[in-house]
Image (cartoon, rainbow over all chains, first blue to last red; front, side):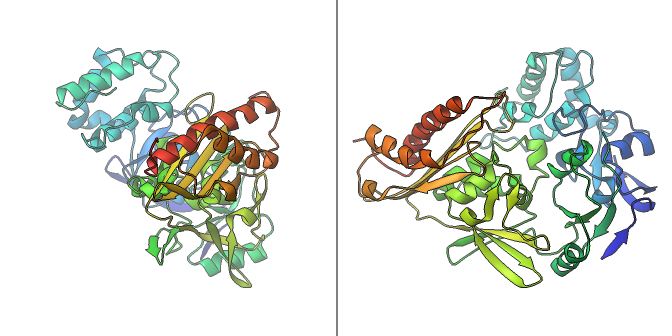
Length: 167
Length: 290
């Protein structure tokens, strides 16, 4: 076993958006603060900081996760995708376009988290196992759109892909 | 909203964890962190030492042997849900897990973490009771197996000794012709349940042979009762039978009266959701309507 003292700086290695970072951090540093303050990736927003609002959602090893409920030290060696990762990736051009065209955001505070959740859900949807969009979107608080525009964007994306529009 | 400082230990074996818990005042085990880290962020929890199970091998397996499914403590909730989604005999399990938080928390939250946390309104402690499951613990004096009904003692407290760790939960496989149903009432999707109800029914030759009915959010722990003996052999869950079964559950309830809901509302919800769950479990078990 390995023990670290509370004020000790501990090396962690994380791959964020395909790039490897090695930083020395305190054990209590949250992943959300690691991304924002250590790496300067401020696209990950911090809202409630207790796992309710969903603004800080990122992908950890391919699964959506609250970065405010993970300690950076405890996801050492993990693969992380943040909204900055989607911004650079052509694969998500359609997603960004659909959000823009369908008024799926207004103030934009919740948007990074929602886009990551939607991106990963779209990837896993199939006709035999359709996504429960109520369930996916329940994990994000949006106070501007009433979710109408977000659902419209998802519908548009699914129509484009020829998938079943269930949003 | 940041956690207070703590020492951090990466355990590499269950024995490591037991040694740390035995020798450290106020150490907490970190599994998925979906409740613990939230509590630490709010400083409702300030453990001196955090022990992560992430590097402990063997805690994330799901195995089925001799009619029992053993679920390692570190199995994430979403994984158990997708594995059990097609198992009719565990009908209430996948459905109930679907009510835990959101996909974004179920992907990290663990089965063991939720059960050890023992929130009286949580889904998994209720499900473990309804399926007559048990908990496997490891401690300085060896391994123990504790039945679910003895494990949960008070809100957020269990039969786990301070130096013990939960390593797995056991879920006995019901007979094939079983069905289950899970119902939950909350103000918003993914919120803590105001009331949750689970029902499990087994039938043979179109007759009731076994069942469990339980509720969460209405007492210090989740509670569950067996199918009353005089309902065995019945060809249908009639209104009277449902009332009778519910009457055996009601004495175990001690519903809180708070801003979320009055105790009267909670009792009414147990009744309403209970009837719905019984009817649905019966149909899912293959029971007819005549």
